[in-house]
Length: 455
Image (cartoon, rainbow, N blue to C red):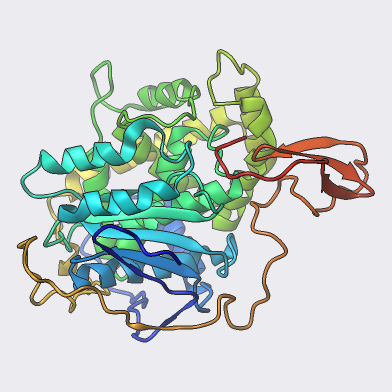
């Protein structure tokens, strides 16, 4: 692998073997606060159940750590990415590669210099990386966050993470970030990196709900604390007032025009929070496997939705509604009413709970990286050791697994996939046209498959 020409050290792990134990236990603990409702409880149970089924094989993750990033921070972020990768293996096979770029805020420009050339035009659109760098310079305490754009030029999943030094370890808003960003890679995997069929609340709400569960995975009280903090952070409705059932239903109804093009504009925090409650409802009622099948089925309306702009693609929303109904056997209108009732109940609970529980989640749980920070040096110019790998390099294919026949997202036409009964049909994938010939998708003469984001 070609070395970067900037001050960054590429730490390459090809199928990782974890040499330290991860604290994934989910101990029962006496909560000082009651859960707000049965939906909250059941969704939490379903998440924990899925976590217990994670694939413990070695992931195929390539970590790129900016030189000088404190090793404790790199360790923490890497642990969380690995756990998320194992968790999501029921959707995306664990032997598929993922490229992850890590840095503390003082080295964000080094990260960008290394990361940006790997992105497609779609993945780099809107100046989002420069926007992050600009925001970092405008805060005294640093920022934490990440980004998961379209697949890179090698057609591989990728995302970046950054954090101030020292990181706010007790904050769920920080500790949920790695799993939040990994969730976006799953969404892109299921939809061929095209978010046009997804509502923004489906994109960010799912990532926030999964991230919240990871942030508080070792204690239900910690999860309660983070959930209450998150709900109470919701901005007021645009027209004033409070988030009543009517206001929430109206918001969902107006959230249909998604315009999937990348923008530097901040996505409204309402999408994250109401979207997380909507995901909570779906996970409680249908479990994660059914929810992910719904996301996968939305790939069938990509061509109808175009870029998600409803005035120019008026059939998009009707097709989304049909996929939703086929997946869950309820209309979206009925779903919005149920989510609105749930949200009002949980907002009331959060208002009473947020200040009765510590905002530092370490009060209730030991975070997996709790012993990694004894001597983090906050001086960005100090001679902080470069991250040293704590893993053993294995073969590229995870032990006990066979390479997949292709690395394209599921549920879409791709070269050499079957298309039984559709001979003569035509399809395109990343700029390459195909024809169904003798039951197999076959590239047309002179065609080749490009990268996601170049349809």
